[in-house]
Image 1 (cartoon, rainbow, N blue to C red):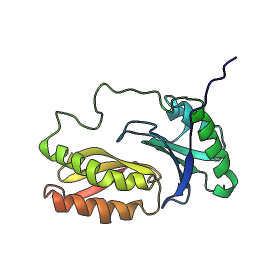
Image 2 (image 1 turned 60 degrees about the vertical axis):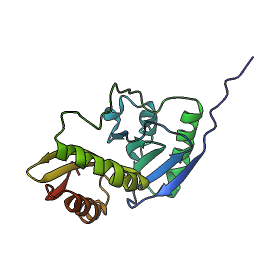
Image 3 (image 1 turned 45 degrees about the vertical axis):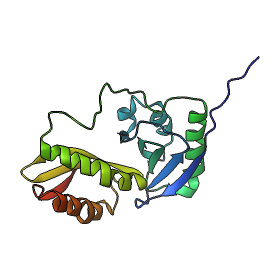
Image 4 (image 1 turned 30 degrees about the vertical axis):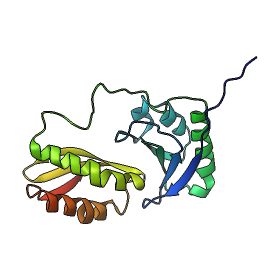
Length: 193
């Protein structure tokens, strides 16, 4: 009898500025570049079998999936040394079995809308080109929310959600860049943090 071959899966762990989050980097893409999925709880993870499995661990507080990594945020009372290998092994087994971490498909690019104003298109372009790669490096994501009266509102996801240094990143980094590149932008605010 032939046995199904497991998908070769390598995972390494990276710390990030949020001490309660750990980034599990995989040797292949999990979702399309620039797309991310943030699951603050089990109820929100209905389209992610991987997130559902990870929420079976009491220590897991949040799951975030983007490009080639999964960021897991643990509950504060648990130490990473107690659970990091268990979480890594669960992700590895799930992916080796060839399962899809997220069950969603898009007809069109969810990041760009042809009805966006020119300023919004420029804001999204700057976020995508300059800011998203740096935020993903730290195991998180930034998503455009809205632009009104000079104020850009963004969503911080993954390890950025609840991170002590996210306010500094938002004001010193993102706001500074956007206000310098686009005179229409006066301020940047985070939604839902």
